[in-house]
Length: 88
Image (cartoon, rainbow, N blue to C red; front, side):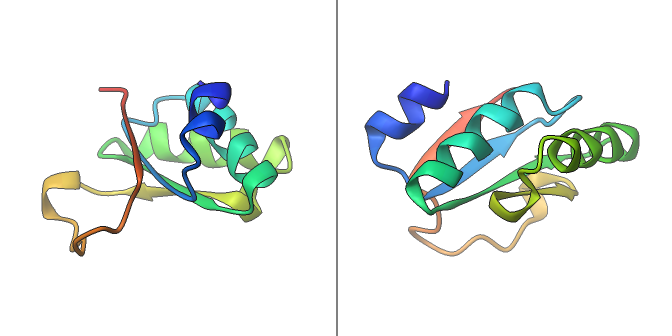
């Protein structure tokens, strides 16, 4: 996943479905290397808490964030992300 993200040249990544943050780690690592940023969205508060801890423990919080919300209700502007990973 990290390689795919890197090869795409993405700088703004959206992940839908954080769970424990495993795939979030790979996306955040890609963003660390490229200088971009990523956001992972999950509706489950427990998943969000664990995913945030996972990012922090790996030292990747500066390149990734976890948003606890229903992705259908987020105010996303046009062209806001250039890589999308559906992990739901």
